[in-house]
Image 1 (cartoon, helix red, strand yellow):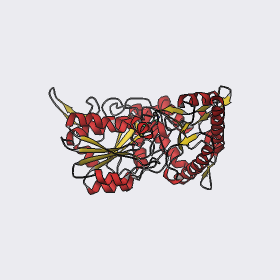
Image 2 (tube, helix red, strand yellow; image 1 turned 180 degrees about the horizontal axis):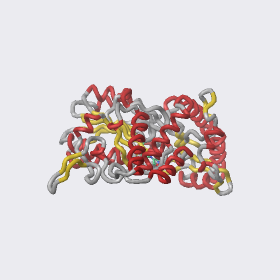
Image 3 (cartoon, helix red, strand yellow; image 1 turned 90 degrees about the horizontal axis):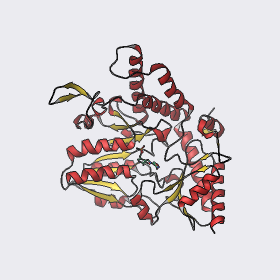
Image 4 (cartoon, helix red, strand yellow; image 1 turned 60 degrees about the vertical axis):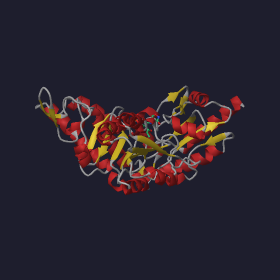
Length: 413
Ligand code: 7TS
């Protein structure tokens, strides 16, 4: 049983992830970089292997058994992931390489078709570069302007400022569900309500949302939701864009090629129905199958148990890390407002040195700007060290982390 009385049973959950069972530099691996990429459960590894061992063939073309099976698995995976995000129908789910590609798809199709000089796109100080740079590119080419919502000192979005920025020129609000650098959970439902009041569309970068809590795009009320498989236990190179059907119907295609057409003449073509209009070329079928397996794995653990586990890690981590001398933690103080992502600075030790010292103890953390350079500037630091947890992490591991940090302080003090 991985779940006992709605609490994850750490040893059972850990046994689902073979990569966790190894020693690094002579120590048991402590993997604290799941915000960058999560480890994969056996359910996903098996699903991918089964696909390649039994059903491997190209999709939507062959008339033979394997191709039929591959196509069936691919479209069944779409159904699973569409349900996973609360889509009204599978056709609203477009496969992409990940969040980055999903956002670029929207910028290059919806953005190009709808943005004009003087229009405004509202982003936030918390955005990952992949929810900022695509909008810069489309703004530069269309004459639209970027506006940005700041954060308060705890790394929470300043909704008062959002209200000031929203107006009749706002066409789009692009906001992350959860900050990868600080762990802040943004009040997306409220942001959507405010954006809708001025007639703007809302894109949610769900890269850090989908692994942690139930995503329900209809309850959120957003227009676009982007997610990455590899942050929720699926293979790398697969992800999805959810969008309302009527938007997908209106949006022009972006990449041309096989799969996305209906008829082709020399000078022009007609397009396949959504979602295939946006899926040119041979897709990552095994990735899609793996992403469906990851979604089902998360559902099998249960969102209540995942949330309880995460709350326990957040509370423990905040308390234990605050006790490390010279450590400055970034992000919200209230455990309810954040995920188990701990971004910090250790006085007198460069973030990269912190990560290197921890690595020698078998502890994997990330150091750098986390693809959020504007946020780092806002915090007044060049980089942070970040420890990020998922379903398999334990409070014991956070103890090891804190001890490693105390040792690092002693080396440099
Ligand atoms: N948006 C957010 C909020 C992210 O955290 C990431 C990746 C992306 C978008 C891009 O996702 P991709 O799958 O398309 O690459 N974040 C991180 C991170 O925090 N460390 O490494 C990658």
